[in-house]
Length: 299
Image (cartoon, rainbow, N blue to C red; front, side):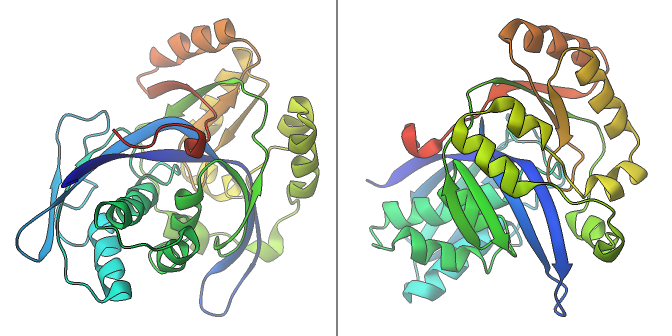
């Protein structure tokens, strides 16, 4: 096996709470993460000469100048960290096709880094466990350990403490990415945790998910980062309202934004809402929840 192509799945946050800020600047979070059926494709190939090569394909659904094409890319960073961990100077070439919106709160860069770690581990038969890969992952970014796990999970600490959860009820989703980009770092820097007037009921959401109670879950869906990002980009609030006017049970911003996702009970309503949102000029994606571990991850 000299080459593999791996799916790098996007995530949304069904609930996102920030508890406090540590002295080192990292924030302690309590989030429910969920993989959705939208993914980048990362092809990983052995090369004869040691070193890392990276190429961004220009035929994906999210072609952008925001993805670095040099060795500052998170994929290259993951490869370097993996080589440091194993003490092996490997020759590897990456080709990335972007389909996940960039700078959108869907962990596009983090999931690519996770795919690099798990894919290299497989291609080069390095024999690292998922736990060992997640230890490397947390040094790359807070969402990367989760992206290795996938599925539904409670994320705590700075994102490195993960507890798997049952999958929520399978429902249609509409994802809308407005034509603005958001810096996660800037959003967290402008979040004043001590002044938050309300925190999401994450524990209640977990219980609802365990019971398969869709309404119990959606009633508790909140994201404290909306308090910052919507003030910067009011279009997010407009998209949320429009989706709910079109029959969504609940619409919420994912991560630090600006992407909004909406949960529907009926496929027909989701399809109709997607068509309406497409007329606004935003990027619209029809998808659903997915657990990558239960699907074929490799091509």
